[in-house]
Image 1: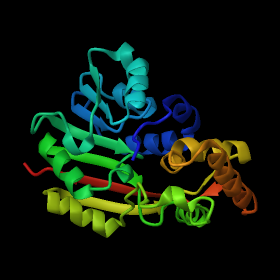
Image 2: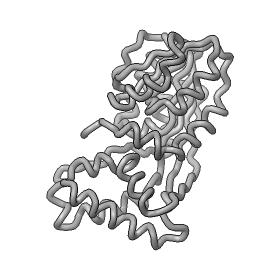
Image 3: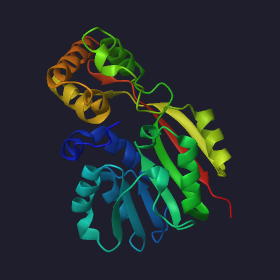
Length: 260
């Protein structure tokens, strides 16, 4: 599957992700001198706020997308040398074992299909006593959108482009996530789901949001005219909802500590 993002459009459209990220950050206790990994930094909006809370610390901002990492490097360059931006895979962290105090992440882990390997890799990179503090999509996240998109994708006009298709996300429930964290070696595990319905202002913003934030991997399989058709069809359905253009987001909070 393609892993690239339109980082400029994501920065413009991702206010919901920013708001969730700031709330998660507010729950993270820091001394200010830690070595922290922002696991999936995106365009760097939440990362900037995280760095403000590390006046004596160091931050590694990592993203798989070249475009996102480049945008983050531009946004965060003024904070050098306290920050480094890295393009890399969370499943193969280019970090020494036991080199981090905290791994922080929001709105990212659901794009990684192998959570057992993900948590094992994070556990390896944390020092004893180090913490994982993250949030991602989980449970029934975007169930309505996924159902409606699949119905369109299954029609004769679209089906040939989705032969062999599988969803790009992993949306586990809280008990499954807690068990995976414990299996990786984490202690003091916490995992919980909560609803976060998100309304977009109009059909145009709805389509732009889907094209950039949620369905870009779907659209990458389609010719341009069918991309527009899929987005228009979805927007027409969401316009009839009450309230209109509302996405049924669910957020999965997850915490864990590497034993001393």
